[in-house]
Image 1 (cartoon, rainbow, N blue to C red):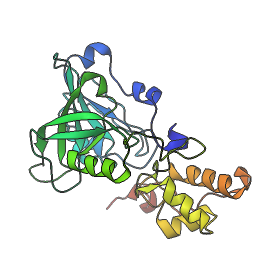
Image 2: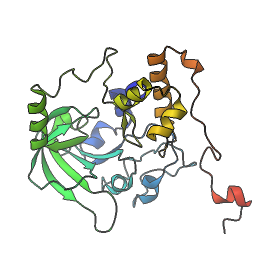
Image 3: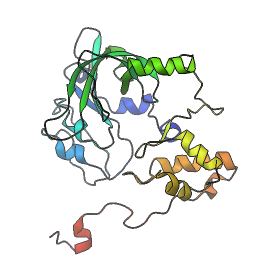
Length: 274
């Protein structure tokens, strides 16, 4: 699913979770970082050293759940908004999801919101139980109370007003197939998460005559984010092949300029980082 829609499936999510006994004990983070990209703020920000040291800045984060307290420091600094704090220990049939939120204005404690899954579909309702804007820096965190069975589905929310407007505009339920194309893939699926570009936008560019990954990169910025097209590049090539009829293996990836991967300063200075 990740390579075709940009949305992680249940198998990938299950690999991120601690043991059932640890899940019932106290809050824990779910790090939905599945691609090797040059990024490590989570490992350097953890005050308990629960995210294991990385040999390379491209390593995927690995958690020691026994050290982790679920404090949320990692979620606040993740530039990809890929870390969520889950609490299944409440024992009252509800759980909580703490998620990064970069929009204005922040919701109010006690507000009832529409909860959404990774694909952007409404899955239910939640109650805002905590809003933490951060004392100095970092992404604000919003904690939602949701039914316990939805803690691994809920990854965003919108106000009830916004949901009502969307429903009334289309005259139909939000969770319909109206955004699903003939291949069964959601046109609103996020192709380039770094730059926020959807499959629909990519397809529109191809229809306009942009038929190489590099052309689409230059006109849309898809592939210019932190992951440098590691995720979106193959997805864009897939769409070009599908819409133009070109063989998939004939579509070249975007041009990479050196250094292709991040390097420490000592690599260029011969060991002297000064």
